[in-house]
Image (cartoon, rainbow, N blue to C red):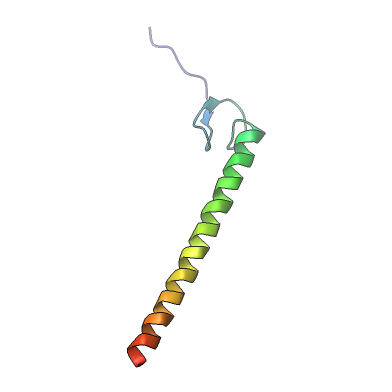
Length: 64
């Protein structure tokens, strides 16, 4: 009574199972995931810039 599940992958964006090549079940998921990655990279870059500015500000204040 054990049924075998066909070879499949799970979409990296939505998690839905699909049969085929690639990492995404559709082009919509791929484009959506690319946009999400761009936003995350932008946020990380902003965090780095703000951190550096805070460090420079702390150094300036400590010298005075």
